[in-house]
Length: 416
Image (cartoon, rainbow, N blue to C red):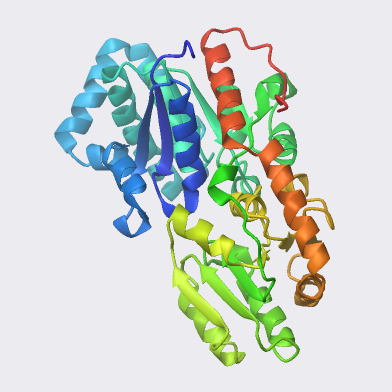
């Protein structure tokens, strides 16, 4: 049982279909006895709530921006925080201004973040929160850092990437790391990037906490090894779906019984569906939108190969889900992915943006049933041992507890 007090859990949008790993982490911490109170900057559109579980989470979540839109409530929150400690209030305001990105628009957004931070700070004080934890180190982490400065409630955050590493100076990753009690990095690659953009005096509080899954949710079943491929992810440029479509167009003639299902949605869905038609892939491709965790699990049970041709990733949870279901995976050699998959063992890694290497890898798996089965079994063993949410939540709970007791002295990574 943890000694930690009530913990506020903040993200930009919670819950939503693309971030179910955060929901699993929250559930894992609660199962260990921690009082986790979820907060979200924005209210997620109901279309992103897939299943009753997410709708229930949405109903119990505090929405910062929604509360801050009430001017009386917003001014009252800031007035009370100012009255409590004027010096701390002005110190937080100076911090907000000092960490803004260049330009008028960025300065305006920083003031908005400060206003939201006051609303969050007052909410946390009213609920007796003793620690704030944030996921994703961009805008919501700015709000978390400023809310901590306003309230005196310490904060930590989970660092994912890769987007934050494209603009670390704009988002003042250095200051966020310096201000946080600790940082949970999702991979060694992620931690190395954090070290690159922060002072060495802060490196000891950079720990590795994997995103995790529940392996039993994806219990594998015997397969006939047909040619059913699956992609799960946001239909946006970074996922490299056009590269997959190009690869499929070269395989269509040799494998006329090939079928591919795309689970997910996003800004490029219409263009991708049109591209599939132009390549003559309309008959073998299905774009089915977002699905619940149970529906994704069912789709994995009926798939023979999982493909994720991303240009940039952290450590994709969807790959972990496929591996837990003993589905062989093909993905790209980017960022922290090699920490999850060793090429030729738990899956196949290809060069990002290379449709030829992708098509060759797909054909290799389709033509070698033994290879597909061995990679599937190795994949499940890997995620069960190193990416199990039960272990990761327990490790995060240990970090939260130790840092609240001001007695960390903990390793970078707590091995299973």
